[in-house]
Length: 112
Length: 115
Image 1 (tube, one colour):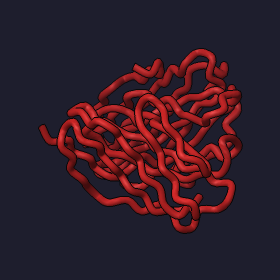
Image 2 (cartoon, rainbow over the protein chains, first blue to last red):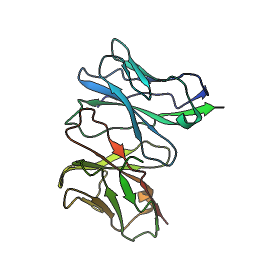
Image 3 (tube, each protein chain N blue to C red):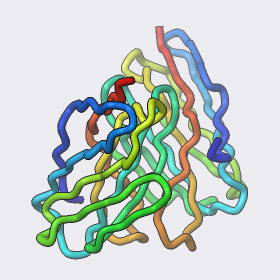
Image 4 (spheres, rainbow over the protein chains, first blue to last red):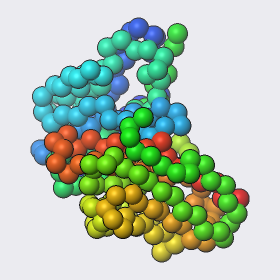
């Protein structure tokens, strides 16, 4: 799986949009970009994933650059409960490759 | 609550003792995964099952570690002759092989402290 690079930590004011970047310059054509988050003392939680097109769900939006070498996770109106470690992961296909390779992620702190 | 249950949530043991963790996945999920997470690091893949078959094991899973899923439902992870380096959070996750998102549902983990 391609490696990812994320900032170690970020702060965001409550109510503002949180934009979390991820670089994955060695991503291959059939690798998906996944985002998970981990709130303190809990297991990781799936947020969103995408291949080429931008994606949106009830939790977040995922913007993938045209060359697919980077992406941004957007939490549109951050709340205190969004304080967590956010992991950007790339993996081959939806199926078959079962191993999610987590990095160290970005520690996002939402400030009141 | 994702529906994946892990027990015990916390375990403190002395070096050299054996410990066993149990994971009850979401009932209709045929794939079950074990991960290990140490402080400040992301989770690391250990092994996964499809039904009762163990299909992949990480090199992290030394001979002292054994995982089973005898009836394709719950799973156990046993660590024999524990070492201080085994102190970590052990996470279980599950999913259905038929799901089109590849999303894993994680439990809250079992935290092991080896003294």
